[in-house]
Length: 310
Image (cartoon, rainbow, N blue to C red):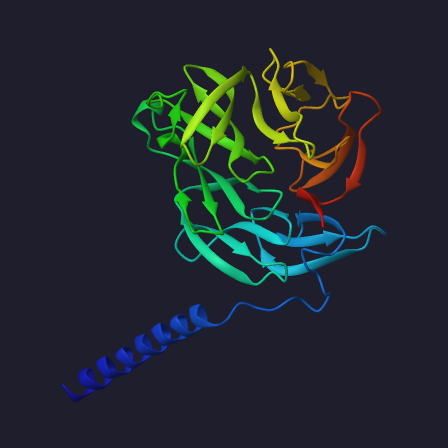
């Protein structure tokens, strides 16, 4: 009996130590900026380094600074960063300041897929893949949300927004948010009835307005006049294309490979996007002019999820 009591006491002490260790680990303050001095105000290209899985900065001279922050998808603007990562229990959205200090963490019920920050750094968005929707036969569908980091206001599921003043369709899926400069308007893809639609969203009114068909993963140009997106072709591949919001005219880019990504604008005339390696893990970031001219050019090897800094 005495031996059983001693064993039970030992097990209890071990469990207590493990729990205490976990609590202390979770309670540790976020790490400061890495020794490399990487911040979200440093000029260069922010990427996810596909060899390490960490947030990294590709400097103008081609050198790379890799941070301690692991992400599955990332983006940054105006000193605000967003990192989608796998946490201890589920996927998480992490908002960081310019020194990569973690400011807020939200649980995400799904597999991280897309992330964006508004030009002012105030609004952040995410898209995850989820399963279990009865209307989708148990296949993957999406959930997208928006957080106002200024007020803490959270729209956790954009499917709750109205569409042209009416309830969102029961089969609605939304993904690929991109923000306008006013921190209220945004654009996204709405899938319903077998169509992929470009919608303009109004965060304050919680409403979406349909603009065009066959537009996936939109990305608004810095001047707010054009949308870069992936257009599905008859063979089910995607062509990186630019849409004029003034007249809905389409301009295919010179990139003829299938681009399954939400492109980023490096400036008003240049796009960046990731292409996966063939036959092995990882990806590279490429760039191409937005006006249909030129040829694709390798920008950063072993990288994805690009964002121009500062």
